Image (cartoon, rainbow, N blue to C red; front, side, top):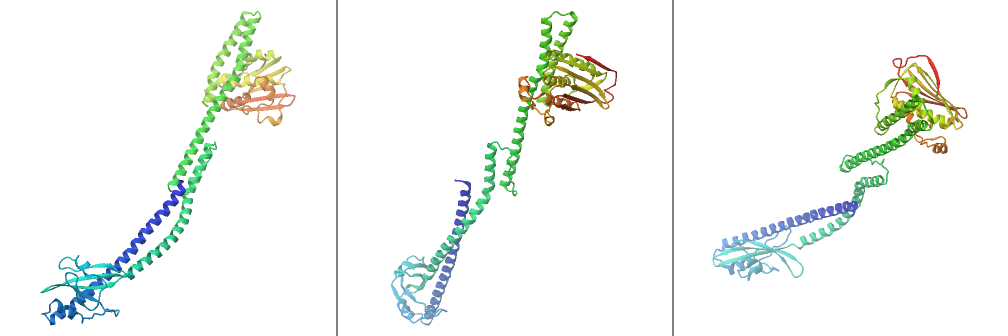
Length: 481
């Protein structure tokens, strides 16, 4: 059975039982009080008759039982309502000896039950449907005991009680109907918050984790609603954290796969160069150095990408790095894939110290150069520059590629966004390069700017903070790769 019907039936049943018990007790209490008054009046009449008989004995003390019974026939007692009290004198066997009228009850039924020397009463139901109160009290005489009996008809009390029962039954029907209607409203009001809770729980089970319920009042149901909201909020946060963790892991895998390509390309390129053509000892040493350096960078980069993306680390130590040497190293690492694509890389840098995390910032430069390579399918020239600024340093990459539409410029740094999806897939892109670059630059406290013109090329500027303490202006140099 649903809670609604449990509440409804309980309220109606409890109300009906309570009112029925109360009404029954009240009617019977009233009936008992009326009956007690009739018994008291019956005893008063019996006492008056005893007094009258006592007066008769006082005038004639030698009366025996038969004489007293004959003399009692002349005694008349009238009540305040003008009713003459009928009485009877009988012996121990219940035989009537005298009185002023016939009583409709049998004396022996009562007198046989009376304790010695005590009076009593009983209810007598007559054949014609009447109900009488029958009282008897003993009179001790020299020649034996007489019983003085009198009656009062009390059938009206029973009729009145029956009529009260009938009226109360009708009243109970009306009361039960009214209580039923009110119970429906109250049960609906009490169950409504639970229905909202149930509906919200079902929607949450279907995946709508933003469900909340209204909290009305401060009762137990309101507390349950508040607890549900707290639980739903925590579940939503935990699911969001799980999704974020999953997304970070996916970003890490995608970023790592993206970042690993360039070092591997450099390693493979230099290894192939050393393997396929004769080389001097200096060339071998230089190629082995690049292979070793790219391998070590790959090892460090995987660890730092894990900290940056999965663990969301924000406190990488920054240190001053010579800007010109840093850019020449980046150019050397990118020389094999750029040469293979028929692209000439020119490096221009002033002597300055840039505050950076070298492995992460090298990933930024490598990504920018690789994006420039992909945009120049027919070959050409890429310019990699580094300059000190008033409050830091600037690294700039300029290409002669296809360019980026103006409406796409604001979205190219979004994760997984690709301007030319078919070309990016063909070249192994995943749309993570510029998004990762922007994140690394922001980690350095800098900003990434992109200018582009369709058919003319793209220029990307990386502004890095550092100030005069970390960037010192020197002479300008130019070295083609």
